Image (cartoon, rainbow, N blue to C red; front, side, top):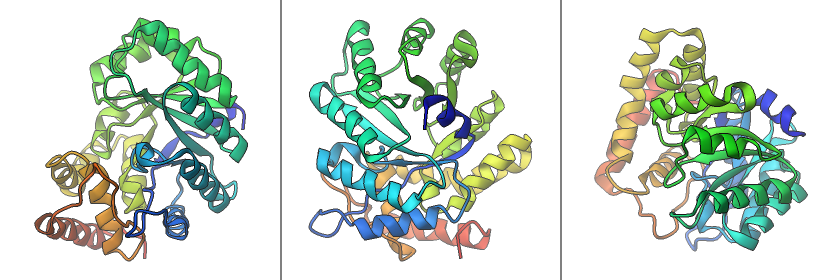
Length: 304
């Protein structure tokens, strides 16, 4: 898929599956297939393999390849598959080139490992991803990768950089960047399902959803209400069904992954365990997650 085609598909919910591990921390590839199959019972517009929810930074290059390959095979052309890419140097180029070799439709470029890089070094980093993959690149602005509008404009001049995923939730900065670049890039919300009212309020029409791993029907509902600008209903669903999860996830670092895995396990899907340094959800908080799931089931947000 060429970069422009990729962008034309990114309208709606971009699914973020976890990477399930067995008890010995090995990949549970069949479990991953089952999870992706479950997610695609709802109309995702794309799926990210080995993203943040997929614990990219805990995976070896070979494990990333296997996750990307299995995702592509299971998706079977129904929607684009975007591969996570990060780290720096030769490892970044390897992940980018192997994403193309596997048949991915695009890459999601995480910030490099170094948090204080100069802008010219960052331009080289993102350019290497674009060149090595030859695919459409989504810049993932998160953690220490916060850019001014003029810096974002420099990144947008790199061939094959076609989209911007905001992972900071700074709506003021995001508006300034979008105003500066206009339709030069495709815009994606990426700081959380709880941010849908804010993103869609400023005109964004695609977002990455970690909830989609567990309750893809809820993710689709948030998107549909955002597009319809059904503000009251959207805000009520976020208040009742999204904020409680994000409040729990904020209790400890890494819960944004381990909470989703725990919920998948509760549903009989394949969450498995997390890899260190992430930590598992404690038993008390698992009861909170069960209550959230019960609310989602009662509201009809869980697949049958």
